[in-house]
Image 1: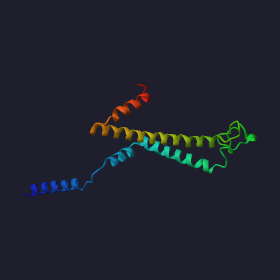
Image 2: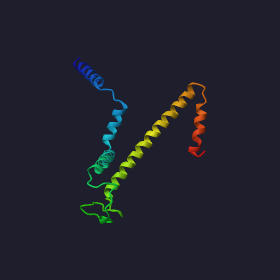
Image 3: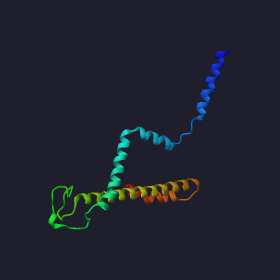
Image 4: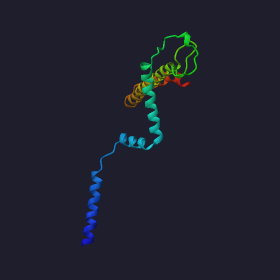
Length: 149
């Protein structure tokens, strides 16, 4: 009798452990997988550093992006100009970070446009499947020049 009593306790304990676990959603699963991937962590860290640098360097720089200094034109890298200067005496590092700011803005805008267009196309397809509108044909004909068909 004592043997069966021990097995009953083990079964009860195992069921309690199963019941105490929380439900795990898809975002939690993705976050856990991301944290386990060292390359992804390093990439995200570098991306954050680049974003912060692109936002702060043009603000904190003692040079102006539109300011010419012909006395300092085509200088080699030094402590004053870390990446040197161009033909018009502008700081190359400042121009690099301003260009990075523009590139990130273009990337964000492209992502936003793709989300809006994708949502519109998806809603039109769903609308087409639920009713008998001819939006699907209109959308297909308008997107054919973009697809090269």
